[in-house]
Length: 280
Ligand SMILES: [Zn+2]
Image (cartoon, rainbow, N blue to C red):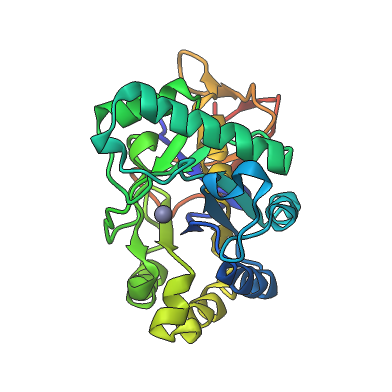
């Protein structure tokens, strides 16, 4: 019997993702830095600003949102139409706020949008039910875990850390043994106005400088991580576990024998749509 453990694209053990809230003009400065270093990330947008054809100065323009959404480095996701505290509202109002937000962002970007970050961070059973009803597949909280696990519940995706702690956490992440069984994700969140308020844009550039050189890391948007894990979980095995079929349209990688001898093997590829004999 051999174990079969998820590896990210090209057999990588580590992934990194970023998530920034509220859709403000300072996001464009972060986006330029991300383009410079090839870093991927997700930008979470409120839509009430754009009501009645408005495009306020202190928010990204609709044309900018469209341009960001069209760039494969980035994802645009929901953050509530009016940015309310969902835990203080009835279910119908929460569901309406999420659905309105989703429809408006889809109209602006011409993309299917299924990612979400909770406004202010809190969530409860009601908001989770509303998220499901709106067919949102992942939702980020603001509870920093200071660790690197994939979420158990995608509707409570707790980030690793706020960017202010990201350099210390990155040192830990980089030092993480490559031979670990489970794959690891470093998830950083924040608001770009904080870089202006704290006068520390150099902090995030320092992080990008360090991490972009690390070829063990898969850089992905939040949704790309969700979609990849979902494709991995859709794999179908024979009863003896020796043959695997990938019914998805995504190539997936796994480490065979990853549990007992984690560094013993090269990750194997299970191509999209194909069936692979793993061992005799
Ligand atoms: Zn916010």
